[in-house]
Length: 107
Ligand SMILES: [Zn+2]
Picture (spheres, protein in one colour):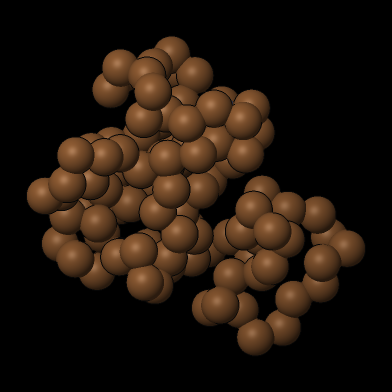
């Protein structure tokens, strides 16, 4: 996957957030399971062509950042990127959003 400028900025912020401890499994979803294709990136080499994932600091596991179809797995709003229409994999809006309209689609 070749990242666009926006994606690269997002990936950079997401990794920094996890490595500095600002993002944890408690305040955002850190998962290695891609809901877009149903694979666990844990089962793949660290660099896959379809997904963007990173090693979880201190643990022998990885977390997904961008799915194979471009979905942002870590809430971009939590890392300072304004994505009002972002929804988690279960369709819930970002907790940073007080007013949302689910009909507008999702990122
Ligand atoms: Zn996938």
